[in-house]
Length: 440
Image (cartoon, rainbow, N blue to C red; front, top):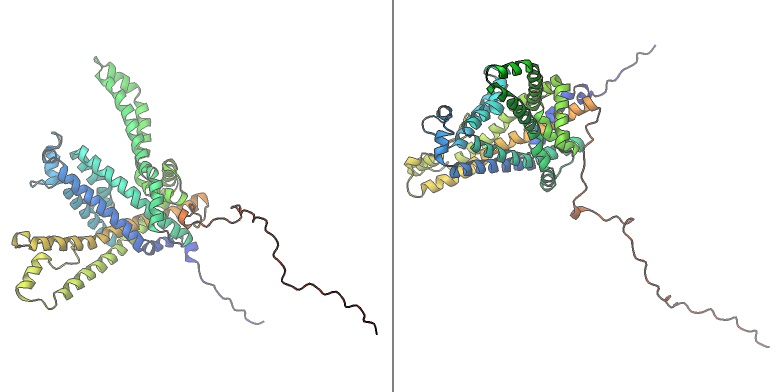
């Protein structure tokens, strides 16, 4: 009996191990149009923060709202820098710490990724908001609008690219996010509004403690179980908002739905498949840290080579003055500050222009981080939707084409019938009658 040969075909790794879809996030996020949207978001957030620093009265920054002076001294040190500048510095420290922790595979809540993520998303924003509530309510509101517009556009572009391998133009993506702006803004606010509403009800009932002679505490003690039930509801809201918030924008971008559907799906996936969501998120985070360092290395090489060849034939005093205007970048810290005290004449203007272009290019790192966040979370949403709802990853909501790109339907457009016209005269000669026979 002849020995039969068995040929093993190519293994479909994405079907065998679905999490490998996450490795598409770099290719999706690095697309220039998404980086441009992320860069626009960073510029608008920075301009808004700096503008608020300029118009905000300094006395409110220094003293906050009276009882928060101690916290402000801790946050702003003795020099009391502008709030946005201090907040930006602390958040960049959290980002760098998180990237280092991910590369070391330190995912814990001591000094690892968990601690950095908690400080970035919760502890630092909450501390600054407590220090100056009005200021940071305005600032975070501006951040939410900018992220809703540009982050929603990035999520939309990623949703179409992942599902159909097609590119959506910036104009189409921004038009989608602008039309869905109330949903993008409202989705994160719905859990917050519910938390505040339930908290107001509980605090109102708590006013019974003012009733004298122990009557108030007795009544509160009798209905304390109700507070525990409401506390369970609040805890569920808080945990669901923290875990599932990353699914809200992808839901709107993929399904074309509203804020309520985005919140419902986010909580459904966060509570129904928490471990799968956690595993996917951790894989995306570690992969994102690696690709972030790759992009950072690329940015460093661009800056270093540009500066090196720019100064290749420059020596003496001119080289020394240029080193003051733009110090050499390092891989550990791309940011720098010119030695303003040593600048002379119009050199401060030259240093300012140089800082503008250098920091604009460095901002591509932040643009990539924003693009990767929404691109990776969109892929995670597709994977969770396929697992929970059995919906394939190629199903995505598509809008009608732009009006200027639409082709009229010939079958639907009535075509007027041509008017009756006289028949054209025939150019053919009439047939001759047969010749009569001649007599002989």
